[in-house]
Image (tube, rainbow, N blue to C red; front, side, top):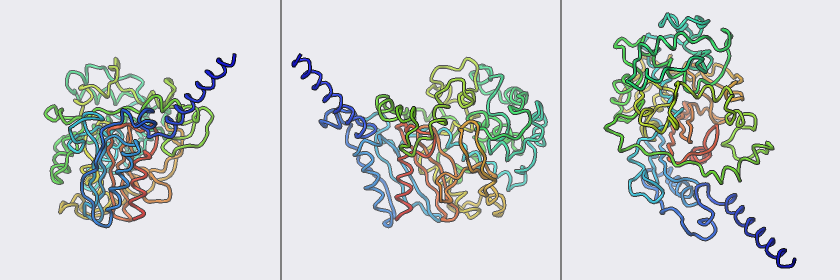
Length: 445
């Protein structure tokens, strides 16, 4: 019996040590790395540029890697027309890789929505759209199913009544080349999800399909969102942002490093189950459990295809799609921050390029419409006429975030834009803790 007790004591000690390593160690460090410095990832050295005023950000960023809370990422900041931060760390080809992550083009998922919103604001400025005009004015077939009163701003604010598709898109409409006219016919038939009552429910994927078609309808050249961006934004600014990833750039794609499952179960799951307040990257228990429930509105809104392939967003088919403007953006941090600067400067030129005739449309896009309870996200969200959200309480920081941890925001009051693009997935429903830490450090300098 004494031997059994001693053995049990040893087991308890070992389990306690393991739990300590999992809970207290870096998110992306293994327990053996935390405890014994064995099997740790290759050392990451942050490289890049900061304006002298912001030089401290480099060491703050470096510490994220040293502590095991980042694997590979880049972040960039523009201020009053000038690039003041452009830093990167880590490798595109794994923890012990050789290819610098800086050269990668990463899927930023819902951070893409902010770029689509910028396209819409430019079209409003040019007189091709009005925020308060029904979409059916520009796309008559859209009026079917009780959607005749849905406005452009409604769709941008996730109150378009098409948060999910009752009739999923036939796989062949996208898998055999994007048959956009047929896709438009399919989308137009969708009935209003809430019987024509204006209801806010995050249009996770579907909204981008509708906005892409709206852009095609009103652009005099019939360009989709992707082509419009290449011609009117990315080209003039000399940046890289595409919906879908061109096959010739495939070698620059960097697959996500998944959030460690052991860390999730030990660190986060118990707190979700008992609703203990914890790290700010996660929403409350109700909101988070909504995303774990396969029958929830959140999960319904995530699907668009019938016979959707397993791990769809990791397939080449996903990277071929240019019509998913809500989640299909591929870019890097400096490009996304520079595009966001269009909104931060509210009508002033960016790199000598003017995007607006005056500041009326861009200021309206940044103006708060109101706060509404979002049925998909299960929380209150404050959104603007242009569909952007207030991202950090107590600030004017506006934009949106993406699955995995990307962040695409700007603050017009400070003429600042900020972008963070990671390889390692965070695990949350709001602003990623890494991005939040970097932004707050910048704001305090």
